[in-house]
Image (cartoon, rainbow, N blue to C red; front, top):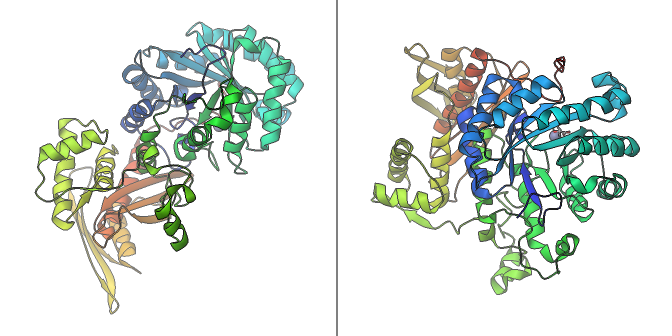
Length: 540
Ligand code: KIV
Ligand code: ZN
């Protein structure tokens, strides 16, 4: 497979760690980003957009670490985002340098509304800056991607001129963003076709697409773009991202996988070709989805295509009957194709560390000894309460143990009394950042409210709870409950996640997880937003 300007398959550019992380509350720390990047490499994405290195020292470090550890010779290309300024491009160039294949992705807005109100620059000025910055990016790496931001609302004639200029300056990928999720599928397809037909040097660059889901059309738009010549798709796991999110990787990949005979001819292949259209190992999809959801706190709706809890549940009686007679009556794809096992009971109370480690390896988790030890302790605790431990329980434990939020506040104890004739009362003991163990109690409207009030009395950081959800990992009365919460502090949102057979305990841990993230943010620097914050002055 070559990454030439006409790749013989569809390149998957994952931007979960950049655009996905721009979702409110989805902030990840360096370790969490590394864990996701490793999983994206196992999934088989071609390019990982690892972040916006100029945003903060933490963002720079994350991109550099991913470049060093995941950007190996046979691994994915590692990309850093940069506004069209020298300072941003230098930072991105430095951050991706350790990767065997490093890319700089630079962008500037080209719609009249963005140029006039955001950039306060004329078309001529923007047309001069973009190729100059692409040429500057070329001094750091040969692999340079350029995006005309808000291309979907840009004047096509101006867009053609811009693309010709940046390709002449060395851009090897030109990415067409529908930044505000405004276009319809036919319009997006026509835009891509227009670019192919009107940009004279377009054969020297890969055409990529990027789009937001404000009207729920991002995936449909991309598929139309593929039919018209796009060969790179910029997407995120579970479709997370700014506002309504980005195009969902799992939906794009499975649409092209399940309907390959429809899409094959658009890539010049015979309709019945079995050759995959992407490099994605589809069996890694479910695991990646769960990992991203747990670490970002971005809950996946049950009816979400491909990875939602109901996506493969045939609950209605008629459907079940049909599925039992012949699966194809109501199923267009097999659950195992996205790595959903049949959730066998795999381990029990007497299973030892070796069996535990082996099953985790079979599920594709590579944990170091310390993480295995922590996860094994959690497994033993769970096995005391729950007779049968399934693959999904194991995944939940591992994802929980994988969270890397520093534990400034540690929950030592939580106790609740409640019932229809009692006032819900909670007692908590918390170890604070200065090592003190503080105990406090509170009465609430329910057990979780009482716990949160008691925690607030100890921690004392003002915040608002804006989302709370509980999901059971498996069926059964003894199932693990996963709690995901989001809290707001000023303009910023922080998420927390925890799993336990006791949902009140899980709620307490999830809340402390979010508070620990908030506490870290209060101590650290604030990251810049690549599209909304003021641009630094270009030097030279
Ligand atoms: O949506 C958008 O336009 C972007 C660009 C930075 C590519 O995310
Ligand atoms: Zn975007």
